Length: 586
Ligand code: GTP
Ligand code: SPV
Ligand code: MN
Image (tube, rainbow, N blue to C red):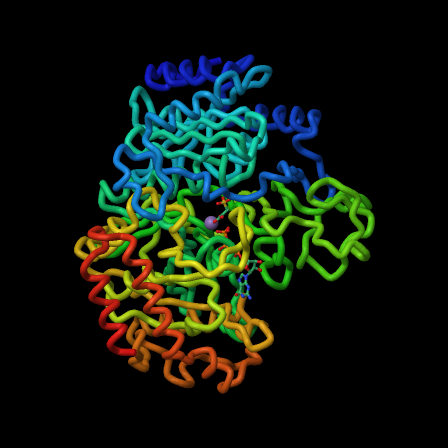
């Protein structure tokens, strides 16, 4: 049954149905009854596997095709009318060419299948900052995952009303052919087309496709920002909470930082961290500050490495009503396992591909390195009381960071907003399993947005620089690196909960309580200003972590010059000036 009489919606669905030729069209109303019957159907076809309902109520396992386990950056396109608008860091094809090519793939692709219509909201439904989308898909896994990750159903259609202000998403699994897999964005048409994949980041179109690639374009045009950032609140013992947003590349620690539990001494003293979001932030000027909302409704988090010590809040979030993708299935008790969950891998199990796997003898990982959980945000014990605040939270600090074995110190602060934008623009990190391709290769990933910026990165930096003129008290900008290694390649900093010590320094700098060392790259902590009590890290090690190796940084400057050169005249002059200053200081 159609759930709207909106002509824009209905004619678009008709067009997509005529193209993909599904047997039927089913509207997702958001009711638990409908979702329950879809779960049952997915279990019957094997698309989902029911897990132990006593230990893990409402939890299911899903295996994606082995050739389809991560985002595909080389097959992701920004199809703006002009190539210049996509910029040098995005793949581009003209809309006409892309529509024509993808139409040939979509043609009849849903024959014998059902087309589900998912109305969804990014942000609290009805709030001034919410944006709406409709995703058409032939995957029940997508429907059920969208029901966790976004707010869905009739209430969204009521907000769209008779209007045309919604993002049109079309997803078809087709035959999962990796050679014909495309994730295409048409910013001028509010349209996203995704075909031949069933992996989260390629097919949950509200997430990276809408809330970052399309939304970054909307933000440019409307004076706000869509960023690959977590949002957290640090509550002091006196009850006052300060908010921080942090951009780290994929699988570089956003979920873990967002759900951090402070070290014992701090916890006892009454410090607490609240999670507002773990992956995406929409920021806009308000009351002279930048306010951030998390447009999502759940977490699509990395499973490996998540355990009761590293991230107990994430473990709790997955205790019920979660979907696990590409993890190990323990056949003894029908629960799940992944590398780093505990030191006791199951012996009688199936690996992420569904093949028999004995964790004691296998010698190969049982879970895919990019295996993930999809969990409702409300399950998270530290979810912020402000999670559903339609105005969002005021941001005191923005933190950039990535995986850098040597160059970047544990933490440093930028001198001002423009220098902070420079610090974000020169971010580098080693690639991870979150995207298909080689892992551990260093690359530039400005603002952790390289794969997610929907327009020219030079224009994006100009937009960043310009935001300061809209905000009297812009956040202070910092850079962190939890991933410095010693000569044996081991991480030097303990990370996880201990990162709170760095947050404390950052917030004290924001409120003017601490001095700092003025170095070539920015402000570094004075020795003694990062509290190491109970961390197991000594002051000599901290010195190593804060060391700025000028020779390495001079190489870094050459790398940045090369990167900046790609942008031609869209590179803001203010950034080349910052680079010249850095080069001179070194
Ligand atoms: P996406 O969901 O891909 O955007 O990733 P994310 O940034 O949320 O990354 P996440 O927090 O899931 O962390 C990814 C990996 O980094 C996991 O294997 C973590 O165990 C590991 N990790 C997170 N924080 C730290 C840290 O402080 N130190 C170290 N050494 N590893 C960390
Ligand atoms: C990332 O890769 O940054 C993720 C997972 O958060 S995905 O939704 O696949 O993009
Ligand atoms: Mn992410």
